[in-house]
Amino acid sequence: MTSEPTFYIFAFSTTENQRMIILTSVLLIYLFILSGNLLIISLISFEPRLHTPMYFFLCNLSTLDIMYVSTTLLKMIYACSIGDHVMSYTACMTQLYLSQMFGNTEDFLLTSMAIDRYVAVCFPLHYSLIMSKQVCVVLAFLSWVMPSINSSILTCFIHNLTYFGLVEVKNFFCDLKALMNASMSDTSSLRTYIIIGAIFVGVIPSCMILASYVRIIQTVLKMKSSAGRWKTFSSCSSHITIVVVYFGSAMSLYLSSSVEEDVALSIMYVTLVPMLNPLVYSLRNKDMIRAIRRIFPGTRSL
Image (tube, rainbow, N blue to C red; front, side, top):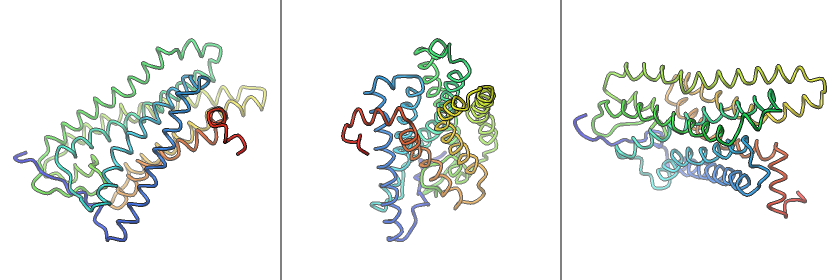
């Protein structure tokens, strides 16, 4: 790379009316995600009854979702508000690193939550012993550290690619796929690493989640009480919903074949789970509803 390029976020090229519609929509989505996930973090922090492994991982997930959308959507809001589509090289590489790390961390946190549900359903008598505070901290630590290593390697690969002048990035943020397509270098080695990295940060976690729920289903089917089966399944339903939405949107993004699809699916991938997370875990979770009523007495009549 002979000189430091600048990046033009091509997805923001719209008319004035379209730009204001996008700005309003994205700002409302961001505020909803921020307030909803902050509510979850506050409830878990201030309600002692929610100090369990499942809610510990949920608190991590909500923190991650806030950081993820802040990394991607804040630049989009800024660009739409003043019409500035240009990003410096340093800002683009930073956004790439953070977005990749947060996206991969989501995989690992969802896997940790699946392991927690597996132990709770299949080994209920040993749950507190197996899912101790130390084990939860280690799982959370690995969920954050391992993706950061993978993201660092990917960012180094992109850093070594060649760009000239004002580079068009055909997405609403500095996405890995868009940066590869905008480069004038041979990206075959990078694509090979992406496949290898995807096995560790995507395929293996998804297989672990699938294996956990296969065992959970087998255990639930062996229960004699229909009420017990329903109660056990309902304790996993929120997590199942988030997993299906997350991996479904990720797979759709991976298989997309056009720039328009990439932009639309990227927005869905970035915003859908952070939006659903507060709804699924608040409205469908009796423990969270009880915590809301205890902490906010005025909501008891709702």
